[in-house]
Length: 90
Image 1 (cartoon, rainbow, N blue to C red):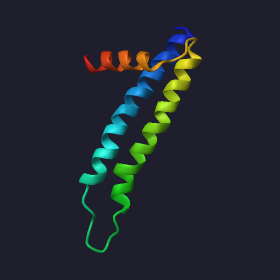
Image 2: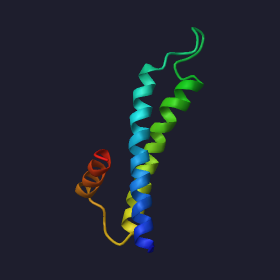
Image 3: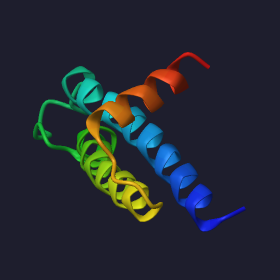
């Protein structure tokens, strides 16, 4: 397999994982109750299950764009929407 195919495949995978992380992080943050009455809102569980996946998703989206552009063509929003729509229909 050529370098172009590998970078495009890794770009699609990192984009799909970014979508999953962006779904998990912000939805978990308001739904996860604090551990006890004395703990603050930003206890360990909220940070690990809410904030970190959200930050990770931003990094993975940047990585997906960088990998796609290294594959020979520039990425566009329409390209990403078509690819992720195709992945959702699988």
